Image (cartoon, rainbow, N blue to C red):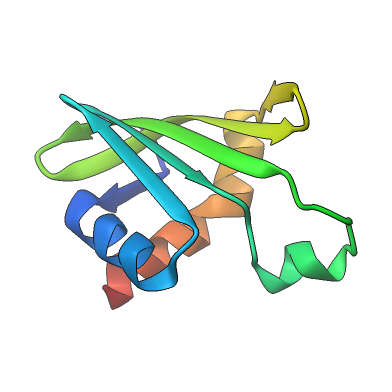
Amino acid sequence: MSKLRVSLDKLERYAKNQGGYEIFIDHDMVTLSFVPVFPEVLEKGDSAPPRVVMTGRVTSGKVDFQKVEIEEGSTSVERSPEESEMVYKSWLDYIEENY
C-alpha cells in the first residue's frame, strides 16, 4: 500500500491552480511532472532544481504513487520509497485537505 496517495480530482485542481505541473493520464496510470518550487528546494540555491516525475495508479478516484524519479539533465534517478514518503507525503496530504 502506497503512502503517497491523493484524490485525482484534487491533484488535477491543484496542478491547474499552481501552474508548472503536468498531469498525464493513460487509462489507470498517472504521471505527474514538475520542477519543485517549494521554499526548501529554493533555499538550497541550486541553479536549476531538478524535474520530479511521479508515477502512480488510479484506484477508486485516488492516485497511489509508486515511483518517484528525479531528472537532472539527461540523468534520471529513482528515489527510495522511504525518501519519497518523507519528502512528498505532507505535500500530498496538504492537497487532499485543501483542494
